[in-house]
Image (cartoon, rainbow, N blue to C red; front, top):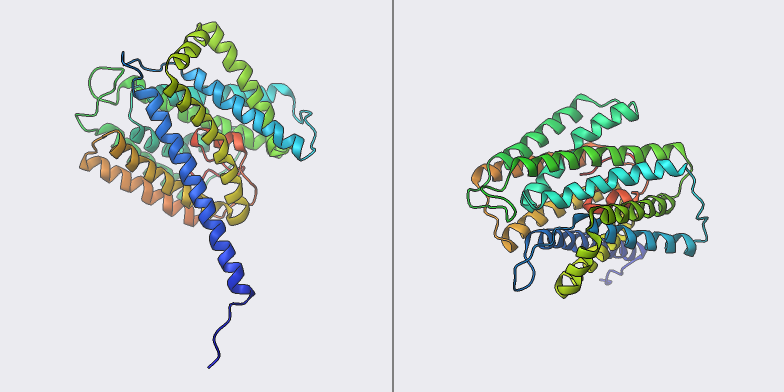
Length: 347
């Protein structure tokens, strides 16, 4: 009996499998690392004097200047024009909302734990639907509203029933202070506007992804730098990272993995589509929460487990129920671990 030989189909499947392994490993490594670093920088004290890093806008500035440099390099390498496609004020509008989004995200970590923040991000479907209706005149089906309601309910359960021992290093009492939850609501609102307005720009102009990223991140660099100077926080932030070398390393690594993750996100969408990407991102959120609970010793109540299961079951159902879009993700929309493709919101 002749030995079976591996044909072209077997070679193709093996190549596809290794591409999938590469994509999953890249996304999980970069974004899980990004999540852990966010919590470490904002919640773990540095040095013998136990000083906390309090300069959220400085992190925004570092992330944006790294992404801007990489996107400019990508445009130059591809020999595409650096000229703006849309009016500059529209890029600036995206930049302002994105800066507010990221600042709210970092500031919220002072008052709520990373698991709470990650679950709360899952509720972004509602503000995205609201902004989509107002800005894009989109219409959503009944199942969209049902899923959004279930996810929001699960998030609310998770936030409202924390373990009594989970304490904020910046406040007194239990983790979920009114201010922390308010910052998360601000994050959701600004993030929903950012992704929706980006969608409008892509549809209204013949715009390359890197073109939008370069101008929005460049505007973000300028605006965040101005904000740091006006707040008087630029020199204190530089002094802090100068005095604490481990903080400097954390900030540099945070900016690097945030930018590197964009490559893996685009690679995954291009090769496997948005459905696979949405499933990977949902799994990444789950892994991030579990890792944070173990690494930073966040206890979870049984009620919170019910909320988490409700959220992730709904997100997986949403991933497999929808028709995936064909376009790639705008990289700027994926900053902060956001995952908003041009037409959909896998997260």
